[in-house]
Length: 203
Figure 1 (cartoon, rainbow, N blue to C red):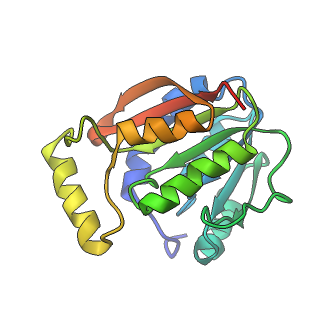
Figure 2 (figure 1 turned 90 degrees about the horizontal axis):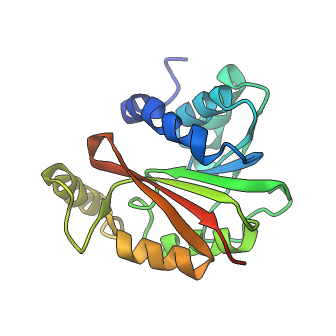
C-alpha cells in the first residue's frame, strides 16, 4: 500500500468534505467523480455514503494506481475507475443513465481555461434535471485572492503550467449557469478552499 500515490491534502480534507456531501448527495443515487487522482477520496466517500453508487474516473495515465487502490480498499458501491478526458467525448457507454450527481476536487485550477469550459459542457450533456454537483477547491472573488496562501499557490501553479491557475468564481458561475446549473451554496472550507453546490434546474 505504501507504494501507491498518496496526497496529504486529500487525507486532511476528506472528512470536512464528507460532512457536506452527506447533505448534497442525500437524494442522489449515482455520482461520477472527475479527477479521482490517488483514489483516497473515492474509497472514503463510497464507504461513508453507502446509499450511492460511486463512479471514479481520471485520465488514462492515472488509472493503474487508482484502480489498484479501489481494488484493495474499495467498498461494493465503488465502481472501477474509467478513463475520462474532459476535452474529448465522454465515454457514454460507461456513464450510467442513472447518473444524478457529480463531484470533483482540486481540478479546475489544474485544468486550462479551455478544459474548464469543456468540463462544464460535459455537465450540460450528461447530467439529468435535478442532478447535484459538488466542486471543491480555491476560487478568487471579484478578481482578488481570498488569502495570501492562495496567492502564493497560484504563482506556484503558473510556474509549473502557465495555463493553470485559481479561477474567478464569477466566471465559474457563468459557465455553470449556461448549462442550467443553479448555485445552491458556496461553503467555506478549511485551508482557504470552497465547496460549491449546484443543482441542474434547466436542461
